[in-house]
Length: 166
Image (cartoon, rainbow, N blue to C red):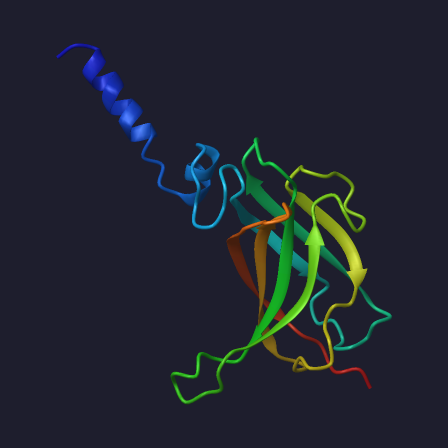
């Protein structure tokens, strides 16, 4: 066997990165995303825990880390929603989804555009329709900020809401 066969095998193996991010960074379209537009959220948080529902005098810190292509055509935005309830399959209530806000890489107080890290302080985003003292799911969805921007990676985490505003 010549040296070419192992080298060819390694090249084929390296080209088999089937992750959406790997495909996108390789120049392929992924779902409705153009080449280099897909992003994955690797870390996200909303702090502090137990924010009082509808206390708009309170502030929250949002931190999101995106893994994105070096050749991304534009910074990314992240839409944040709350999922409340179960799946409705076990006799419990179905999931309710409430959109909270969108944060953008390099906007709204985030210091550096295009670095894939969003760190912003915002007015408490927990609105009056959310249940107090409940564990909910925060859903972070990455989206390209291009005019026809695509939706890509999703990240979810549990969050404990605080009491309702008196």
